[in-house]
Image (cartoon, rainbow, N blue to C red):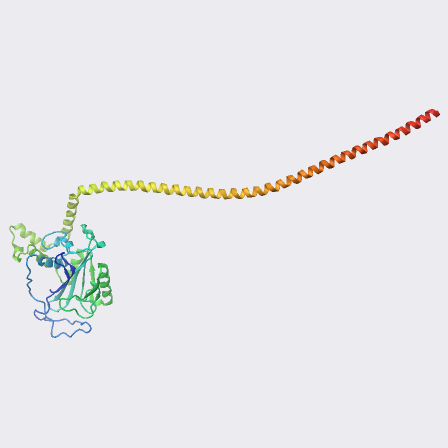
Length: 398
């Protein structure tokens, strides 16, 4: 069995009464531990004087109304009873989310001491807003739970809630955290690295309610006891109010809740509650659905127009490339044709000169042929005249 030894609250609480870094110390004022277990001390730590003592068996916190007593209990019970349905003082689903600002990574860590051996175990909860922005959507509210056994390398005082830690132990009421506050991811990484470096710490990290409840049972911290405590403190009344039943059915319900696993019924209740919320927001969801459908239709048209424009641009680009290629081919062809035309023109000029020269030669040859024919005829005429004169002489002689 464990008893609460210390409580540390860091960067959490309502806006008017926040816990910057507060430690409630209940150690060393109870009876001595009967069978203390051997504990390895931190380096440079003073040797323990005598056997360890149990925490205070009882304590009184005097605060006026509105001073934060219920806030403190809500934060402690949020570690041992996860889920908004187990919130102290009612089932308000947003009461814990109101204790966290946009830039916060809130921590609630509980150090428990075993009544027989004095062994310590720390269980805690870390929460923050996703995106560093406060929202009414519970899905943007991130929660996680962790546990470890304090020892060399990690303790409640050296919890890595900030990027640096003071070397010397902090003074009473002073914070040992230095530097910028870590986000939940940074805190988880630092916790995981410490667990890898020091296996004796037995670091455990969980984000699911049911698994965390099972892990608390494995550690020896029965969440059922805290559920009774929550019901006894639901209206800040006394413990007898838990058993103040008015009829037999109330006592039967109390007995069934004590002996029955409520995880299935809690899931059913959450499911029914979710359907109820959806039915309550039906008009809003219908309008949102219509708006979304219209937006999808318009966006579909825009996408189709964009695709058509893209295709037209591709066709235009292809046509432009083809036209440029055709122009280059035509320019090359024109250059070749111009060169060939010049060559043909020069050949035509040469042929014209050749024809002119041939015509001159033909004319000259014709003149020569006529002259030769004339001379041949003249010679033939002279020969014929000679023959005629000879024949006349012969005739005369005859």
